[in-house]
Amino acid sequence: MSTSKVWLRRLSARDFRNFEKLDLAIPESGLAIIGENGQGKTNLLESIYYLQVLRSVRGARDQDLVRFGAKGFHISATCATDSAHEISAGFETNGRKKKVTIDGAVASKLSEAFGSLPSVMFSPRDIQLVAGGPGERRRFLDLVLALSSRKYLSALQHYRAALARRNAALREAARTGDDGAAAVWEPPLAEYGATLICFRVDWVRQRANEFSRLTSAIGEPGTSLMSYSSSIAKESDVRGALENALARHRRHDIRRGMTHSGPHRDDLSLTLDHRDLRLFGSAGQQRTAAIALRMLEGDTIRESRGIAPVLLLDDPFSELDLKRSARILDLLRGSGMGQTVLAVPRASDIPPELTGLERRTVHAGLIE
Image 1 (cartoon, rainbow, N blue to C red):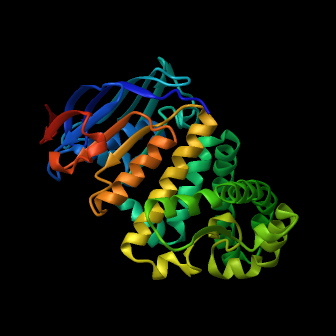
Image 2: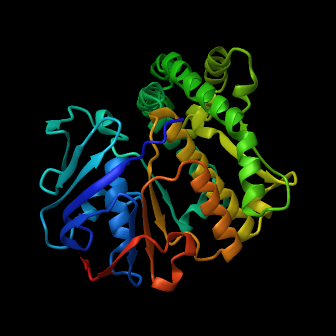
């Protein structure tokens, strides 16, 4: 495994969230950003992560990321990675136009720039990966695999497009009684859906033991297990089984106006001592599992790109005891911890292991 790390050297932002103008030099080891809630520390981490996934980590629309009264936002970074060195993303509210450039060249498709700034964000909100519905865990799988495989990203885009078209055809069939248009989209749905399922199954199989090890190492005494929940995935011919299921359930789908078979209905099963963590896990147990998932995300990116991603830590230890926090940081260091940007409300919240980071404060969108 390569020991090289992403180094985000400088970050600039204009009219992003509450930052009117931001120009920040970042040391190779990283930074500790200190500020009360609502002052901009999470916005700073979000601006960095935007250059990784080209959308808000908090699910906001691009137009809602624009500072009040401004006409758009712009984020740029100078960094040392395995490929890009200059990355920028801009959005204009007039026409809702987004433009991304890599080393001065405009990306003709956003997918070309997806993953340009390898990073992983840890946040207390990550508990929803475990406590939330299946959609949260599907999005997690899609993100991890799309960031580490162009084939998966392409299949995901094609699958979503075909799914939207079949669902539209189902609603039309309910009105006309003709299901031919819906049937047309079943072969591509089966083809791309099978790719998604197989990638997900392989990732879960390869990472299941590490998930169990991480939760135990963090301090969870029970046995944590991770598996992929899908009836289609159990078949020897996944594509054929999915296409058959789509055809078999077409009339039911027409009545409901949506497609009920495929990877968009699957789940990532997380259990502790054979009990569903979503339903029966305590908040602490769910948080431990969520942190383990983020660690697996970092491992996957590091292995696929050959470089340690930037770690964005949004006060992730606020509800953990000192022992668990120290174990998590030990595990991160053991896996090749990258440049770290830590955001906390108070200097006293900085873990002892990260007290060496250069410190800056943020207040009302100004970093000093």
